[in-house]
Length: 434
Image (tube, rainbow, N blue to C red):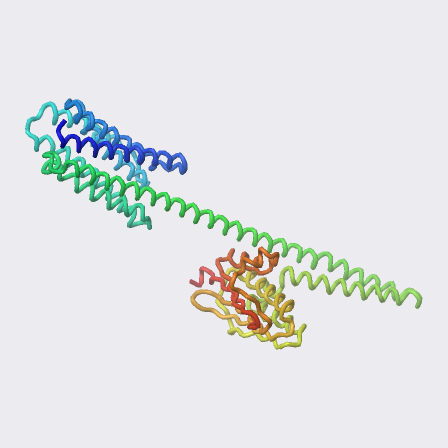
């Protein structure tokens, strides 16, 4: 065996080893992610491996049958890669006319090797077929990339477009031995580029899966918040319409009894009426906390103003509320989330900064409504973020964050020791306002 054949044999063996790994990788990815295009990539690289096996056999035995199968598998590999691009781009609809393309490599290879003496006439159509199929593969991935952000499709597009152009040099250079063994190494670079694009597709698949799971979790979170509010609304109505009415009727009955009993029992009946009044006040407070009527009757801004007013009436430190005359419309879920966030924020102020001044501000900017709660209390180290409150068992801020996140908003806390606390809650405007 001459030195050139040895170099060609070594390069082909190296390429075959890399191709077998590429084929195994693609079949493993298909088993893991159940994406048909991974399976077709595996089939294509398996055909490419058969092509390399045929050329190795031809180099060793110089039998034309192996050259024939080398040409057949070369063409079928290009078609398999093109079909892979069709499957990936979701344009895979098999048509009977495609069988003509499948039949071309074995038929033309037979004519070119066994029936034709003119090399350029024999090789030209085969090379053109191979180049057009490979370029079309690159174009398919490019079309997908132009419509979808995918670095994997970008890399595959560039790889197959360059590989398709490289095929055109076969009659001029490679068939005359001028690329031996460098043509094999260049094909290895293209093969590695395609594998890199495939791995980037895997990364894209993982990112898509993560985005889908995140969207599903956000949808589930919104449903849970909505169901939670509906349950609170139901309990509020039940307490207001049923339990409160029973207490009111009981108060009337006790009043009537008090007018008909002697002095020794009248004081006890009066005490019972006072207890009923206390129960009614507690029911009104609970129903208000469960579902504030102002939020349903008057809207978000009056409900926020009322909540701050009630909080201010229970403390001596200055409490202010600044807001424009109107706020843009947000969704019903976002209204409830903002109201609950203000409830929790003021509750935290009452627990940790009861004697500090408080300022609540509601504004609209950049397509979002911003609610800011600032106090002059002792503050704390906010560097670790809100997650530490959840792990420490303080679920108020963590619950606020989840409720606001469920409507597409954000919660931010700024604080430092002896510097007070500023809580910022943002929610997006309703889609009708955007």
